[in-house]
Picture 1 (cartoon, rainbow, N blue to C red):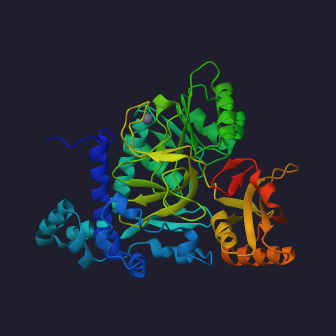
Picture 2 (cartoon, protein in one colour; picture 1 turned 120 degrees about the vertical axis):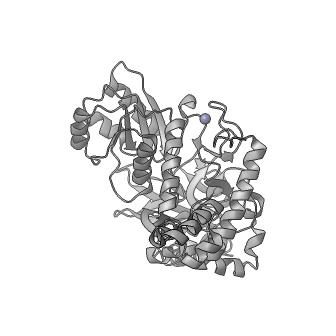
Picture 3 (spheres, helix red, strand yellow; picture 1 turned 120 degrees about the horizontal axis):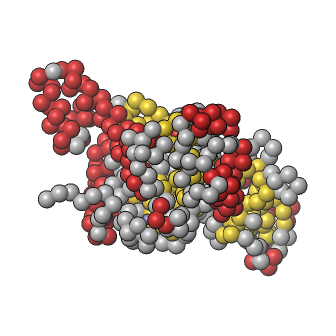
Length: 463
Ligand SMILES: [Zn+2]
């Protein structure tokens, strides 16, 4: 019997595939090779073998950058890298690669070593993170997986090997750049990565007229205004899930750039910690969310304030299965989604995990002139723990005068000592989040009920 193509499962075969993938990832990679997770399982008083399904994952507290590295030191995040060994390989490798290695071991010692290394040794790193930059490791076998995921991405985006990619994503060790490189390679499509400056992109476009242009969402409209000679363009990829305003501005600029031609504007996105890019399907024109991979990603949602599992909107939590370099189990991405689903896509009919209504990096806010960031989840936990604060809101937005981002905490004290409540809250926020919000202001409880905006949770609001 031919195996089911990756995107043609039934909802029930997808569910059982994901249950098996979770059990195998915890049993063969995370439990044996992650000291971090061994410690955590023991703190939770859980045997790793009980984490054997998607539903069982829900009972594991989600974990994020601040949990692994409370001081904000990226070195602490190195604990996510799995520490495998040659002995471990023989015990935990998948059947086919183990059999191949054993055959080679008898005949050619150094070829055996290459197979073992491909499966166990981290050979490349990308730097990821919403609050800090930290390394995510991949083995050579992981890179093959990333290339295969790239070929799938190409199909979801409705592209072929005849498409020519021009990338305006800064060539660096980031998931976005590496995943685009591997996607073009996996699909066998020509690609140029000249850098992010408009003049470099224009020069590359003259050399090889692109049909696909990839640009960071935040800068896409601006770059498109400044690059001429894009009349062959048929697809614009917005890298990093765009806001509605970014998508609209980029779409207008793209239509001006191509003139009379037709152009599809689609988002690709890698949440913090992920090693693959998810894409919007061409059939949906961006309306049915980001398509992930059933055998690589398990998507779940937690309440950003409490970290509790929820079936409603909230913070996107990912578990990466089928890869060996780093252990990301119930990883809090800092992105907010309106929901996740494995229902068939109404546009392309693929049955894959999808993230809908994703707001990138919504739980990390900018404070101060130097681009310093504050983790809103840490602010929320500081405020919830204070007995002298009756209610509060965290309001993120931009200052009208110069568009600089800001985070304002509005709190209603419980009791007479209002100054004490503000000072106490400020001290706790600084201790937990590492820095202060732009402002902490007093409010009365009725006023807080009326705070308008887009709710990321009950108390975290975007203006
Ligand atoms: Zn679709």
